[in-house]
Image (cartoon, rainbow, N blue to C red; front, side, top):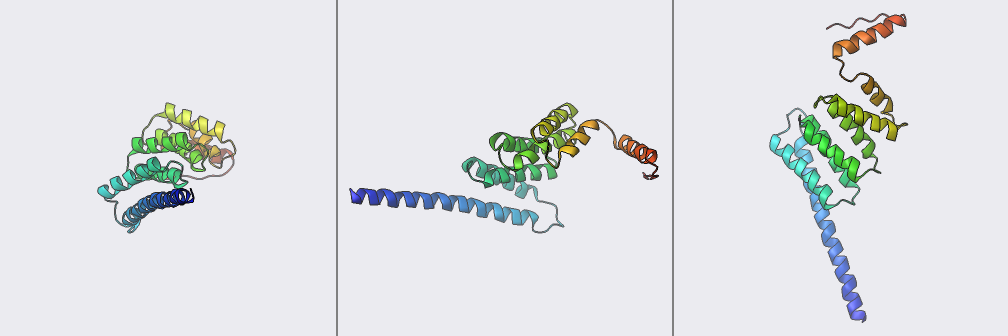
Length: 181
């Protein structure tokens, strides 16, 4: 009996070590790709590296859904997608953070980013309004709540309209500032 118990215990440790080494290897792969991607900030990211890094981020989150790095990597995938003009893909990654990890710290920021992406790159003001409203309702004390409210009030307005409104507010307050085009 002791022999079987020892074998079971030893086997459990061995399996645990193997699974951790796979996780550690995945983290090292992501780290190497991030270094390649962000090592020289003066160069534009290489599309192949971007795609590889996005794939690794998503694969990690799928392979280790209980790991605390899973929502972090999905959030990074959203940021990277957005920075490389892949708005729809970014929206998908931020949506995964919100759905799969609603209690993590990144979930609030991911919901805000969903509104931001719909407002900006995707130019879908109806969806942006929905996401910003959800954000304000779910996170009323969040530091970005005021930004979400501002965004809702200004959905669909051009930069020129926003500047004119800002100038009018300053003028009514007795301050004179003129923006140049």
